[in-house]
Picture 1 (cartoon, rainbow, N blue to C red):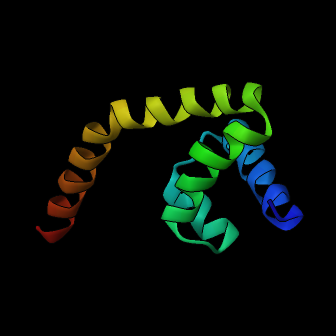
Picture 2 (picture 1 turned 180 degrees about the vertical axis):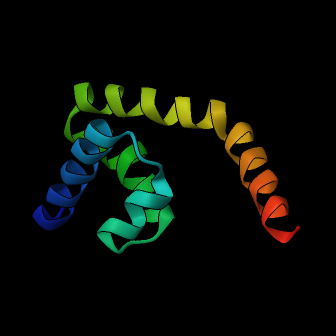
Picture 3 (picture 1 turned 135 degrees about the vertical axis):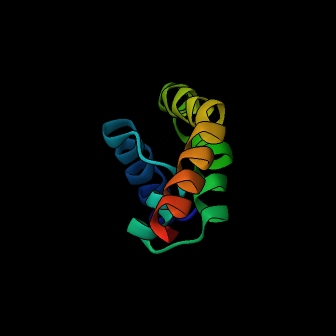
Length: 83
């Protein structure tokens, strides 16, 4: 694996641990696609650092568990702004 990719993966992993931001927000910050961030944090990180992967995986599972709440809140705010 290219060292530039390894560096990006580790940067993304440390960033999500520090900030608890979503894949979408990380993709914007690092100027890559959501698919790339997902692949970095789910596949590549597992090969690079298993302990870091486990920490990141817990955060990503939490985001999956609450996504229906975030989506509902976004919809509620959208319709409040229309009125």
